[in-house]
Image 1 (cartoon, rainbow, N blue to C red):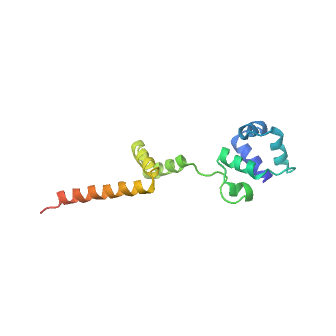
Image 2 (image 1 turned 120 degrees about the vertical axis):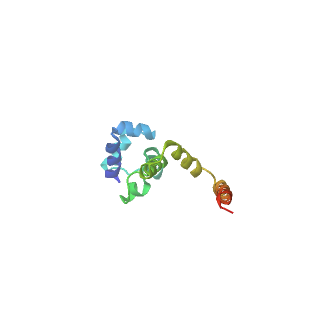
Image 3 (image 1 turned 30 degrees about the vertical axis):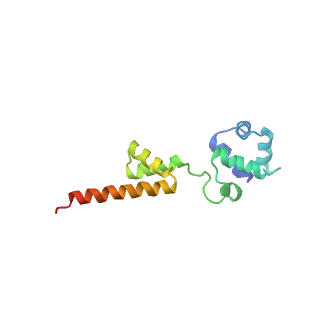
Length: 124
């Protein structure tokens, strides 16, 4: 874990002191972790993961990706992949933030609208 803590810090371009300041711990603690003299307690591991958006599995084992994708990163990727406009992105984001029951209500409403439109446009 010592090497992974150092890698996080270097990737973010932070000194040991600035890294520690962001975590609210003493600067020499980071030096101790990176040298392997001390291992961070679980609370510090959680702090590192939360503050720097680091995957806890990666920090503890080295498996997976260093950083957890942020919600906005995922939306940015979708926007690129599907050429979404800003309005499209807002619609997707707002829909995803709805409670599951609210999503179902929106979907039911949209189905009703489509059904009504199909009825009006069907020759008869």
